[in-house]
Amino acid sequence: MQKAQQVSQGLDVLTAKVENAARKLEAMTNSKQSIAKKIDAAQNWLADPNGGPEGEEQIRGALAEARKIAELCDDPKERDDILRSLGEIAALTSKLADLRRQGKGDSPEARALAKQVATALQNLQTKTNRTVANSRPAKAAVHLEGKIEQAQRWIDNPTVDDRGVGQAAIRGLVAEGHRLANVMMGPYRQDLLAKCDRVDQLTAQLADLAARGEGESPQARALASQLQDSLKDLKAQMQEAMTQEVSDVFSDTTTPIKLLAVAATAPPDAPNREEVFDERAANFENHSGRLGATAEKAAAVGTANKSTVEGIQASVKTARELTPQVVSAARILLRNPGNQAAYEHFETMKNQWIDNVEKMTGLVDEAIDTKSLLDASEEAIKKDLDKCKVAMANIQPQMLVAGATSIARRANRILLVAKREVENSEDPKFREAVKAASDELSKTISPMVMDAKAVAGNISDPGLQKSFLDSGYRILGAVAKVREAFQPQEPDFPPPPPDLEQLRLTDELAPPKPPLPEGEVPPPRPPPPEEKDEEFPEQKAGEVINQPMMMAARQLHDEARKWSSKVSNEVFLEKG
Image 1 (cartoon, rainbow, N blue to C red):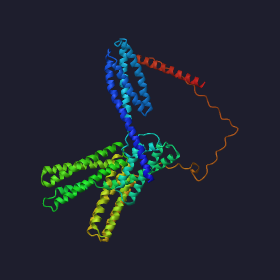
Image 2: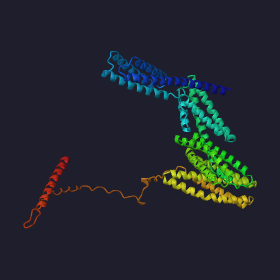
Image 3: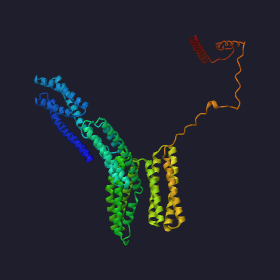
Image 4: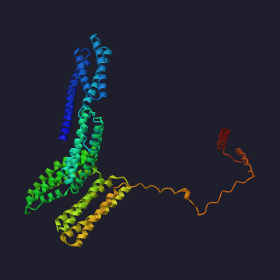
């Protein structure tokens, strides 16, 4: 009873806030529309130097409407900006009106003022339009992380008016939790529902305190801390449940449409032809619906960004549009056996549906954590293997075949996820490790299927049972290796350096350093040899010389001597 009263009070407070925001927005929108009409009339007056006083009245009216918007604005910066513009425009308009009353409306000063007022009015209209747009109620985010962020902002500051966005985000999370719980069984369902109720209760209590002006009280801070922890628990369980559902529903996406195709092309004399078709058409529609619903949950609860969420929503919409068209095309083919046009139309619709679902599957994989999906798939394979054990113990070959088929589909799904991750990775070590583990897994699927067929034909044979179970465990082992390949790798650090004190070249200690000689003084260092400039060789008697080349060589020699002397002097000065 107390919880119902708290929830009711919280809803009353939120309703009052929403109604107040709606009234403010309606008033601001009306003023915005009035400003637009008055400014149009004012611009005509400003362009006419001989215009009457009615234009000035239009400007005054536009300024009055803009003031209403400023007074309703919650952002002090935007409000002050508008009010400042109002004062400037009013002063300019008064000066222009005075000039026109004096008959100087066509003077250069009046024309400049008119132009200035026209520009200022346009800027004012832009500011008021932006203020009205910013006052519209914000929407809750479309993906999980965005909702958590909006909720956290409100939890941190429950007294700040966020126009109900934070509480709306929390309600969205709780609603997604209920949707996930609806497909869960037994204690898992009850546990998730209990977490949803806990978050609801704490949210209502915190909202009630904030409404009474006690949002900063110790009680409110304690509630905020509890709500934060409860949201974290709810998020973790929702993601776990969603990942498990994706693992189950998306383990096989195309079998129902392939079975529908078989039914649509059945020979005219096949027994129960219509009944089989109707059953498979219904199965296909239900399967398509589950794919879409699960994809939407992945978009809402997963870790996807906005573009991935929008991609999932678009692919779900396309799947819902294509599904009835596929069934219709299949029914036309059923009723027109051998008709080539009907066959080609159905094939086209079928391929479009498959292509779209493959795109949806890739986007869903992007929206969830890959390692979590692999963990969920591995656990599901273990459960399938347990079902196969029960089937063999109870002599139920159909149950065995269903379990083995599920194992094969889940293993193939893991291969698809691993292949996509390899294609998207640029880490050569990661790519090599995942590819090697995937190759090993792919080699285990066909032998398991063959062993399942063998034991289904003679389910009481202990040897065949053992062979099948061994094949199933090999698949589990290979799946574990794929999962391990996705584990973060430890960096390859070099080994630590050895302890320098322990380093020894031999087992014997080095001999002591000999003492310095006593009583002897080392001889002084001899002086450096004198540096002499090399003289340019003189021409010898009788020697034939290329005169221009000789002159150039001598100039180069003299220049080198000059620079050598200059450098030597600089070095000497630096040392001195």
